[in-house]
Length: 349
Image (cartoon, rainbow, N blue to C red):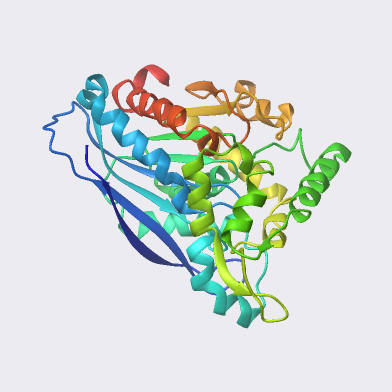
């Protein structure tokens, strides 16, 4: 086995929603191997979209285990190899937010929507980074909205920019299960916002942040390597109102909370999923212990009566944060789903 190489790529995303062009940082991962493999399908490129309040580097434990799984399994390596992986970061999160900080301050910008992130994903394709490559996208939670809305510009060509999609714990719902007119929906959104806003976002140092997060959900359930990645890349050195050194979240709690209640982005994402189901294999993964997302919302994502005929529905013994809690189990499942997508595509449509 060999180590993963990481290269940073900065993409200027097109102006949208009245905002100026913003920077989107994406890590580009590759890994060399001494093994001679001649897979029947060939190379596959992967794109991973993170969840709310997370960073692009949190995929690294999954990527390491995924590459190990594929290279160590003869059946998988005969089918395909992973040539590269990309992790586009929301413009208000992590390193991307730091690069955009001066623009945010200058124009008093708050609440960067998923639609803005989606334009960044589309730019990754249109600017040639994935030209002529066989791509599979993997989205977690709200990252699925960015993927599906990001694919909308490609509909006119009739050809999706990916050969398959893996949807993990999607934060999606349709008009029948959630809207501003549904009292239950409004209560859910308010509770989610309140829960986020009640959490700390400043600490004296990273060790104090670690002590806090390891005692709070959802971070207390995360695998250690994922939590350490979050502490390294999701926090930044700063000062408080008195000038005292502190560390704080790069993506503030207020920024996180502003995301909830944007119903149209979810409705549009489900509309895209319906259209894609007939042309590419789509697999949906749920956490069997999740209590965050209402059952009605999850059921709506895989409602075949509305055209959402997915290739498969799978479960992992975890709560909502599946990739963070069980990166090894998740990587193992993803390796099998990639095989299913590339080596048995017609049987699933």
